[in-house]
Length: 470
Image (cartoon, rainbow, N blue to C red):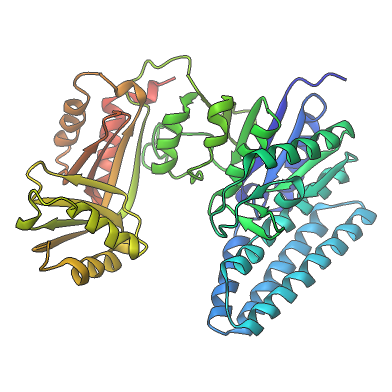
């Protein structure tokens, strides 16, 4: 039999959080599998990873009963889902037995961690990988329930081999490619649909490792590049990448097509948290990716490719990240002093703070930094303790600011984009406190007060007529 496409389809946690959703996905995959070869990658059922993280926090606080309470919440929820999702009684019994084995392993792990009284990065990865271990069994059983062959596989079982950097591991791609292609080819030849747990793999010693938050997207692209997939679909609760946040702009549109580099920028600045390394495995193979909704499958979503067909528009989207803090670092001795910026960023890095945006004026007498509101206190006290009175004279802090970013590769070399942007902003009496644009001209970002976000986003969406984009 001839199959049209090889597809890797990844479902986020919100797509598989009720039995009705899981059944709908099983039906959809069953339909597709009649003409295409499919590998499904799943996140944990939404909220599960958070509960597992909370279990680890409870263990750190030596609160065993809270940890066990959370574990039984996870257990009851998945048992409930299994019973509601799988109709055939023999299959229902089978999945409940399999889940029970996972549950006793989870409880044993929690006991062990409580006994040791510590959470190591390695035990943490083992713990949080359970979310996907459970969700793949639910999805796979739902497909079996429709009379189609399917098996659940963890990242480790499918053949993802990584380094031993627990919490943010990277795949060893050559070994991984050999193992994954072998595993999946043999399943394809048996007409069996693999349902793979995202977010994790295992190092060469067989210890479970994870890729970090949003890592299931990364699992999907790793697998896609290993089996030379025709397309990779990321299914979630959004219709695709949008020209703006639809909660702010009523007539925001789904973008039909964007380039990898635009998508990477949008992922960093957008509501859709895509793991930053997701696109790496696709770039060399030029595998197209679609960002689609699992609830609205008629909509084709956004196609992400190496070189999109049309780049008529200078700007493709206006995104915003609210609730940040701005720190203005000033000091006369900073002028002409090599290594000042390095000291500032080193201090922040040591405190574990992610800097979202930077701007420095040519006179070098001040550097402005944007961090998340939650990190603001930590950032300011680190800078004060390390550098105040040495290379820094003064720190000014502004809370509750938003970053507005315009993204689009058509901005490169187009004259007058900035004047159009700031003209539109000025008309709306919005005050801009900081601006940055990289030399790639792919992204123009500036900072406004949180309360001005909606006005700024709407003004720019109108100024560039993004509602007519496609």
